[in-house]
Length: 297
Image (cartoon, rainbow, N blue to C red; front, side, top):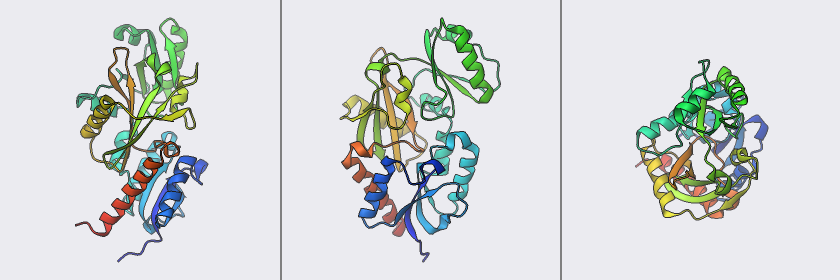
């Protein structure tokens, strides 16, 4: 039998090598349950992946700037240990074109126009064709609200300039701006092994809708309505494969319909500081995985 120094190694980037506050709570909870757990920097060649039974992707916030390198590392890591979530899911979720796949499977998403890197792109034409008056421009590989812009149709010069800058660097998403995000914010539903755990609502301060997507923004625990639970369950039901952890971000459009903002399967904040029960659920799900690895039957 192989002897491992760790039960769980929690992957972080160099900027959060000691883990962010959310995942520090998870580390402490795992240790309190008698598990051998420690953080590691995902691209540290000195860390022996075979020394841990599970490598848990949690604080790898730099992956969007190093997507290809990160995914290559994940493929390698999965040959040395059990990587959660697995590389197939990381690859699928790392580019927001996954939203179109979910839409084809019956999930209501925010209407989205994808523009490929380097292609000629006309801000005015996209808005005219879609009949949109105000939009959000953002990279298709991004996190934390980085390089995300809210632009009105009558700001055509600024919109074209920002669109040109984004398309020069990578694939771009254009979506209509949903005004309700300023008042209702975004409801995030957290799941472990496909089971609902807890939920939190994030609201943006006035004038800064991008704060919804940043770490440390305003958050409050919330009991989600039945409709949101049913919607999120459907999203996970049609996703490519089950995952250890998932966060389903839900918005409401002007007609009062639920829309998927994002399905976060790589390094979402899971709001453990707002839900002691959620923290326990996460640790229990990890323990269950370890037990199944000991006894696959």
